[in-house]
Length: 168
Length: 120
Image (cartoon, rainbow over all chains, first blue to last red; front, side):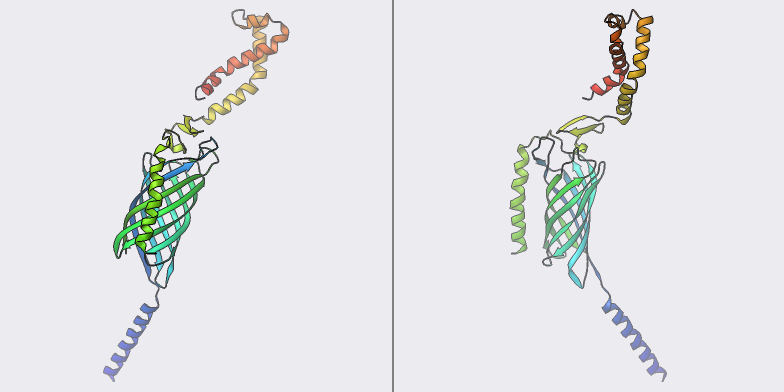
C-alpha cells in the first residue's frame, strides 16, 4: 500500500506540474541594438518643406509577444540622437508579424530631452538570421507636438535603422 | 517576397533619399535644439531667445510708464531741466507735453527697448 500510494502521489504531482507548465503563456522576447539615420524634414517658416540629413542615433529595442499569439506584439524603443546634436527619446509600438522574420509596426514616438517632441510612426522590420542576426528597419515618423518645434509645423523623419537582432 | 528582397527594396528606397539630402543647406534649423541653448529657431535661423522678464517689463513699462512718466517729464521739463532735451521739446509748446512725455517714456523704456532690440 505504501509503495502504491507514493507512486500515485508522485504521478499526480507530476501530472499537475506538467499540466500547469503546458497551459502557461510564455513571453517571446527579442532585442535589437543598432544605429540609424536618414532624412529629417520640416517647414522652417518659408512655407515649403526643407529636408536635411537626420541626426545619427543609437537605438535599443525590446520586442515582446506571447507564444500562443505570434502575430501580435509590442516593442519598446529607446534611442539617443548623438550627432550633430544630442537628445534622448523613445517609442512604444504595436507589432504585426507577417512572418517569423518580418513585421510591420505603428506607434508613438518622441524625444524627451533637452526639448520635447511627440508624434506617430510607421515602419517595418526585417530580420536576417535565426537566433542572432541582423535587422533592417525603414520607418517614417511625423511629429506635430513638442517644445522642439519652432512653429506649429510638423517635423518628419524618414529613417533607416541597421543593427544586431537576438531572440532571447 | 523573401526577406532579403524586402531588405534590398528598403535599402534601395532609403539610401538615395539620404544621399539626395546632401544638397540641403545644413545651416537651416528645423528644431530649437539645433541652436545653442540660449537661442531658438525662428524661420530657419537661430535667434536669441527672448526672456519672460524682459518682455513683460518692456510691455508693462512702456504702457504703464507712459502716463506717469509723461507727467513727470513734463513737470521737470517745465520747471527744471533746460539741460535736458526736453528744453527743445518744450520749445515746441505746451501741446507737446504729451510728445515730451512720449519722449521721456521712450527714454525711460530705452533700457528695456535696447535689450529687446539686441536679439532682433
